[in-house]
Image (cartoon, rainbow, N blue to C red):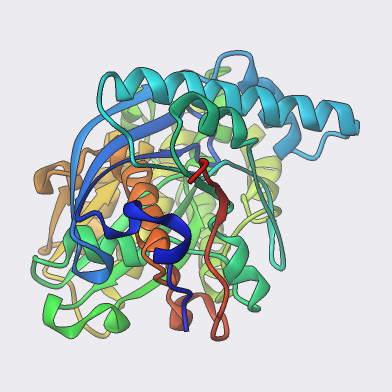
Length: 379
């Protein structure tokens, strides 16, 4: 059974109206996303409202994080300095977004520098955050699941259930470095009917193709991809790569980014053709996977950085037709805020003693330990 948080956390556990900051930096390393969420109620009965959010540039930390994620060797001193600097960046950005609002809890995902279960590291030094905000901070949200032989991912399905459970059967798709998906039944069915999975590399492929073809970090709005026509042979090859990733039946991470396809294909295609091929293949596979569920969704909701790519959106929409494609913003969840808001929600659930991952999704065993690493203020 999950531990009772009340004795440890005092009045915070008894609060029915909590203000929580959540943060996320995805594997595409585009920015630090922060959301301020008002959580009413406790546990699985809680309701969440995103009050404001911000996207904070990673500055000179970005290149160091990318090098770390790519496996560049670092000394112990360099690792410690990177974790500290990243924590300080969080602290400054979170304090700025909080303003005069009292913060009851900060939930911090950290940067995934490696994910190959049972190995997984979401790196950040949380102590500068606790010092700056003077509130409890929870981090390392995947660790308890991994310790119980789980994959540690996808981590967001229960938070998706909290945010979107009032709507008809829905597929919620995160278009991040990797695409992950949550299939929701009705609210009355409860979270145990929720399904979720990592699907395939997404922005990893789109951005890598753009860096090679254009020397730019990403194809803004998918404009270049829309100007090109997909190469059918290269697209079929990439679709096979994406299907194999989905069929692995596990969380995706280090080594699953699809770079082997980029390496063997990018040099043979014109820039617009390359970007069109990647966007169409990735979008088509994601859309087909959304509709392959035994309980067909009545709508497909997208969020994340890839939602801004029109070529990717069009490919998904074509694959799911006539089911409607919509953005999470329509449900009061801004595209760029969904993941950071859901980290805040998971922090609240962990604070309430709820196991924040779903065992039928991650494969974990029963877990008698409290989820997350906690930095707690003086009682």
